[in-house]
Image (cartoon, rainbow, N blue to C red; front, side, top):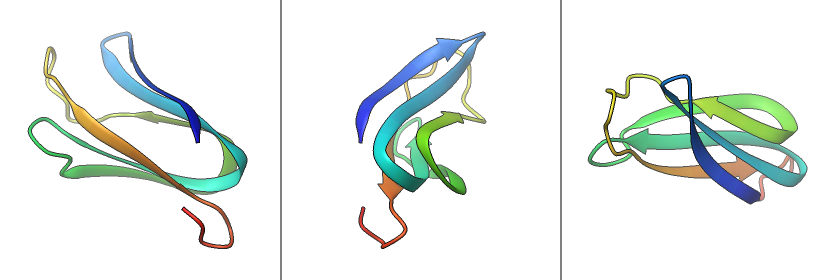
Length: 73
């Protein structure tokens, strides 16, 4: 995994990163603790998630996970 970043795009938080091989991806996030999740069950090299249910101006904690077809995280 590389290039993990969160940006503000038109008032929404978007988390992106790349992997060096096709991988499934998940991002866990929340205001106090990461208690929400978004998942992409398609193999891809470029991963992007728009975080839902985040109030404007809130500080968000998040972490990203990618897993290849063999199950390596």
